[in-house]
Amino acid sequence: MIKFGKGNLRIPKWERPVYIVAGGLTDFRKKYPEKNSCQLVTEALRMAVEENQLKVDPEQIRRMVNWCVYSQFADHFGDQLLAAAKVHDYLGFDPLGNIEVKTGGATGGSSVLAAAQAIASGYASLVPVVGWERMDEVSTKVGNSYIASAACKDFESELGWMYAAYYALMAKRYQYENNVPHESLAKIAVKNHLYAHYSPFSQNPGKYTIDDILKNEVVSDPLTFLECCVMSVGAAVLFLADEETAHQLTDQPILLKAICGGSHTLRTADRRNMPILLLPNETEATYHHFLEGRRHEWPGFSSFLAARMAAYLAYHMAGIQDPVKDFDILETHDAFTISDIQTYEDIGLRPYGRGREFIDSGEAYYEGKLPTNLSGGLIGTMHAVGATGIFQIVELLWQLQGKYDQFHGDPKMWTRYGKTKPADWKSLQVKKARRACAISHAGTGSHVTCAILEKP
Image 1 (spheres, helix red, strand yellow):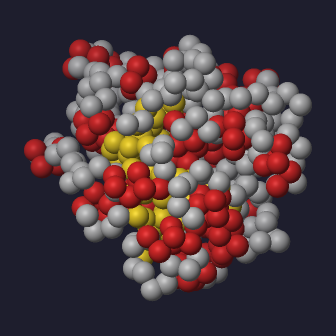
Image 2 (cartoon, rainbow, N blue to C red):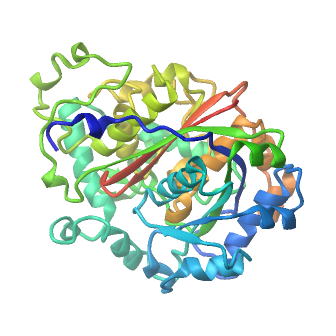
Image 3 (cartoon, one colour):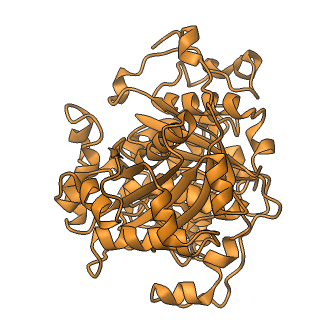
């Protein structure tokens, strides 16, 4: 698509408000042989209905549900077609209607979008969104090849059947175009592994220096092992509701102000040059000299039109004028350090070509202007693909409700997962957080959703 028509840029509208009332997680691990997928989703669901201070008992909540959305990336991992039907029955929601969503790494975000559409249209009043991934029944090598199948198998998959290889090429191009040192990328990995250190749910926490990141084993040049997301097993659950139901269930409902999606060609080489789609905080003058250096086209090989499209629609839907000022907390899909810095630009935290300024300035850190991935993100905590976009919004929900300490700081939560709360644990609760954003991202930018949450 080179030129947008008026209908392409129509801003979505809810027929009625959509609220998030509760969330639940399991911990996330490389292997989880002691629990099957149905047990994991049940555990996450139980946390949502039993540990979120809801005003209705769990059995009554089950009787209030009238539609279900399931989120699983790949049947290959669990070797079970129609896995959602099995989970649906196991959770006790049969014979209610349900759908299963699959949009690669953005499956979780797309599932929340599908549930929100059901609530906003009046089709349903209470919808659980249930996501999981079973990634431990195959070897890491085979798992990487499954995930790589979400790129174009006719062209890109032949680059090594590993997503790190795709993003390594992007990293090389991005660094060349924008003169970005590897140290700026490494800061993202240092930050997210550290924040995972404070989460009982995390799979890959750690306290590293920039030098540790740079000297770590290279997966695909220039990306090192510690700059790549983890392959995880685990589950996440959200409950979405209309306004009346939300207030029946909780005294702290959070408004899902907007959630919008964008897409782009599966094969990155098919992405044609077009004018930059401007966000509310940008003008044509912002990019007056942008294409005069090493960059000659947009979106090219180093920007994600899908992310820009999702942000454009969501920002206009929610009335966002400047994301750094208007958001209090952000969750990005940090599958790799390079995709994170690309996303900074796609969603307007900095103009294109200047994404490194967001991490270098300190604004992305806890107590910075816009704390990002305080959950630990995909690099530090999890990437159980079908659960990931849901996990992000669960973490934001708890932040906006002031419940970070409840779910991350209670020693019993750490004990539940066979861990000991670190002696140096600290709270990452953002003070007076009012508005949050989550980016759920697939492939090399084939699908992206942008969700905006707000305290009423």
